[in-house]
Amino acid sequence: MKKNNIITFERGAEFYFDLGYRKIQKGNLKSALRYIEKAVRLKPNDSFIQFNYAGLLAELGNVDLSTEVLLHIVNVLDPNYDDCYFGLGCNYLQMQKIKKSVEYFGKYLEKDPEGEFSEEAEDLLEMLTMIKDANNNLDDDELEKIYKVEEEAINHLELREYEKAAEKFEIVVNLLPNAIPARNNLSLSYYYLGDIQKAIELAREVLNYEPFNIHANCNIAIFYNKLNLSNWVDMQVRNIKKLNTDNPEYLYKIADTLGSLDKHTEAYKVYKRLLVLEPDNALYNHYSAVASYNSSKYYESIRYWRKLYELDKQNFISEFYINLAQNAINREDSEEEVISLPYVYQLPREEINKRLARAQAFIEGNRLSAQKIIRDKKGEDSVFFSICFDKLILRNLVFEKIKKELLIEGQNILRKLLLMSEIEDEVKIEAVFLLDIIGANQPYTVDFGGEIMEIPADLLSIDIYAVNGEWEDIIRKTQKAMKGRYKGAYKRAVENTWMSFIKYSYPNLPKVNSIDSWAAALEYVYCKLNGVKTTQEEITAKYEVSPSSIRGKYKLIMNSVVNRWDYKEDFKRKK
Image 1 (cartoon, rainbow, N blue to C red):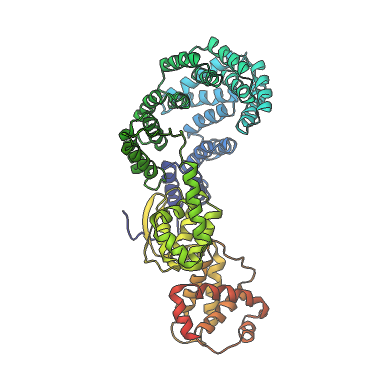
Image 2 (spheres, rainbow, N blue to C red):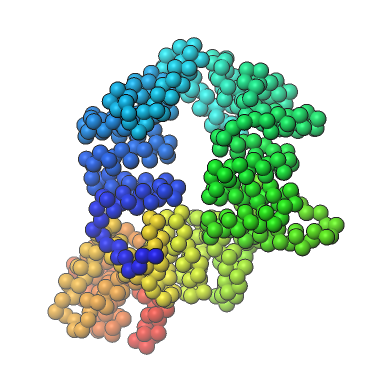
């Protein structure tokens, strides 16, 4: 663990790029994008940063902007950045512009025939030639129109608009008879519309053309099962078990199909194959556990859920299901039936409802009842679950409850949140400020961009000055105006008050419509807290603002001070 790292506000492009790269390694692509974009803004002419920015954009589905960035690199920044040509080939392939894709893969191989991606580029060129032949040598514009229709059909399918999906998939397969994925999706559309015979007919057409097509083989087994054709299902399961692939996507399709057909032992074998390929995949570990549990292999299921806990100690699944499996072991000698688990990566709905009910009781109860709930492990786990389950409404309500009631008992929840890599940095900053408000001991251990840091809350307040310079302008204006009028450590005192306000209000900091009126309000708060005799009129006259302009701001700042428990007793004595 790295300790005593200080977050400063003078950060270079490399700093943000490194943070972004760590986020990418952890799979947090959206968080990574924010950091990479900052690096790009700081070093717009760095072709390496721009290239990685383009790659990240493509991963996130923004292929058009990714292509613009790559073209900017080769046309303006560095025409000899050969990997960009391979990236452009991939982007145009994703946009289904076959000719453009062929052009840029060809350019890449011409410029760097022994390059890192040369073998892949050659394979893709060969594949594109086959695609052109299969598509009756239609040009890019014609194909693009067809692929656009297919994309619309897929969107309809995902939105469960099955009639619209079927209509558009029909158009695609009529124009491109060899479009196997579209035909498989058309088959699924008819299945969801209730026309199972039509779905089976289409799946059989695919299998006549490609007998080992994995999606068609799996889909038709589901269709037979829907019609309760058990003999046909068993026959199709035998066919599925003969399919040979090492592709994780196809293996997952097979395992998922077998599981949904209640062929749990067979599904378990396939999930184990997936774990050989990706041993640290949390989803595969959970589904292997579910399949083994449903196959009455309870000890093995516990082993997988323990592995899941090792992979992600903040997950909500492993502990619950380990207890469930242990209970099943304890009941093995009884005649009580063990209910099969669904293949979903979440808690059962009943358990989710129980946890949300406890969290609601915490939010709505008085201070004593909230303390009682959160001191109990089940209650604390439920409140923590709620702020991860609903990242907007419930999280805000829980944070507000902890702040309003100054619940020091909430610090365990907040500290756990700080170590979750998938939580946005802005939320972690808010949690740090909240820990400071309720009086939790500093420093606070935070995972920022994959790096564990121990930081005091005040450093993050300083960092906010870098984000919004107006908040720093206010404190500097106040201190300058107070110079010569007050004795003692007034500068430190007024800055502490101001930082208390920032911490208490974050992330809902009010708009700065007038630096002078905020500065006047801050000085007036200082005077009230320290027994300095003055009036609003005297203070506002000095800043040349009206008394009415500082009243609301004065109340906001004062409220943040009196609600901090570490200021409360001092304030009572001064009153």
